[in-house]
Image (cartoon, rainbow, N blue to C red; front, side, top):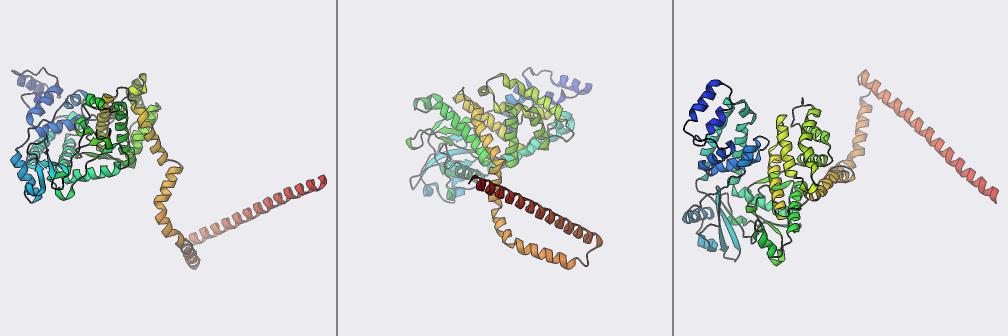
Length: 511
């Protein structure tokens, strides 16, 4: 951290003369002319894979990080050398409780992929199924806990020394990273995520998710169906194979918005390394998803917030966008809607100088989060994860097809979701949801009403004067209503009889 001048980033935040003098003294003999974002990225790379992953997570928190630092941290690459094949074999045998040969007819000792958390080997089961075997790195938990301890210490010092540091809430960011890492360490959780996504996507015929081999999987080892395809980054190879690239781009957007607005459960790590395309005749041009350690979930409130924000934005209803921020409770209640509206207008209006196909929904969401930072908005982690994934999907789609109009693809999902939440569809859905309760309560309703009236009548003599007076007033009002209804009934009946008599009289005169 000292080599890359991280101390300068902290000390220069203070206005005290002595601290600024200390910063100048400590900079003697060091070349610190590189931008702060570059220096921070290089420091994380030197510190190792856990800090690299932490930097990657920070790059998604654009509601907290300055844009120059977030942009530079997004360039971090998780390049980790593999651990030995003998050790991988040992870990797999320990998890399975039997020798490799007893499970696999063939096992490739050389890994096909290696990351900071795990590495992947290919194999063939005795029944002929080709599988991929993901195994956690040895002692990775101890390494992660040690590095997290350093991050917590740094976060505490940052909060003590810097008011701006307190605004960034570093301890909360580290706690979020802690949860994110420990979720990734449980390969059983990843398998469950994959199974849920596979079930959700069944019938869409656009996305393939590998089947999990549950009886060979555990928290440390994951065995799944091996998927065959071409990495989506190899666009020319896909084009030569006859893949319709513009349709592929639209399908990717459809998959993402289906997961978000229909299921509320989405693959949140959709970078090109985790996406392939099938060239097999039976599944030609379908997406293949890999690595399910990170998924995002949205409840009905989150989906409504997103849908209304997007629709209000494209209608240029900035007042509504501001009201949505306030109604959500993420902006302090003292926030003035007109001030927030003005800030949002300043951010969003420039986008409308371009065609709709050139408007980036991910950038819009990111800029809204950045604007909200001025107003101390509490951005929910699931929405930050969604924004990061939307940027990935959008970048991937426009890499495939620069003419992709993301809005025209997203709008039907937003409108359909809104229609399902408001109006007759929503009422019908609610009635279906409540039908079991209605079936239980309706038959008993006459008896319950009779018992309540009977109890009221029995207790009327001993009731307090106020209750008796209220009951008498209700009875008097009921009698008055009955008289009015009876009078109205006689009037309507008389009118109808008059109309019929007049018609018969006219008919008789014509004869």
